[in-house]
Image 1 (cartoon, rainbow, N blue to C red):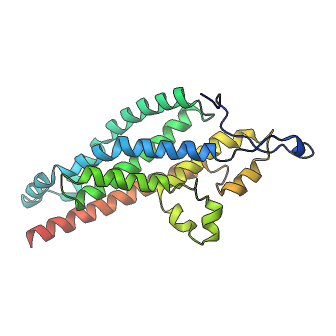
Image 2 (cartoon, rainbow, N blue to C red):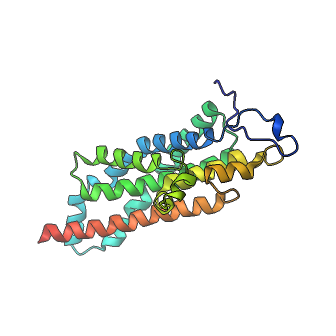
Image 3 (cartoon, helix red, strand yellow):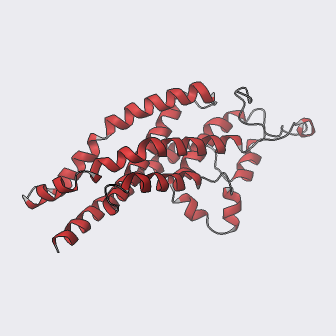
Length: 238
């Protein structure tokens, strides 16, 4: 591994700034980008299959008078063990090969809520796409939300475009900010991490809030997916 486990280099605090070597503010966002892409590839296709292959079952249950929300909630909760197991395998391999500074519990939590988001996004896609097209479209959608994470262009740049709200509306940005906090925040005694935060646009000290927002975004995706399921079912009856 060429970086030898070092994924961040900043400028030293004054008066030692002149002794700083070349700065590296992009490795951690790039790491988060690769994590987002990997989780998207892992989780999008299984997420589509949760509902994509059971539309006929849902229509039959709904026609029989069963509660639609209970069916949807049960199917959603049944995916949680799969997400946890997949995340354990992914996080273990990632920490072993990528050697990031982030600790195992923090990486596990951040990756898990991102799995939650990708499954929710895939559920939305499965309501709109045909069964044979759903997995591919879900992969494409997960790649889009993973790439728009503030690495390139940076959040500072898009803030100048007055489009930061768009990046903040996607889960990839919150995942990258969580990784930035846990991989960069601990270097405050040696480097000027405030300058790194200002240059990249990521906020420090917001790891818990980043994970909460990811959980909220995943929940919003599922609410929208349920609405789409109801709308598609009613249109089919019409």
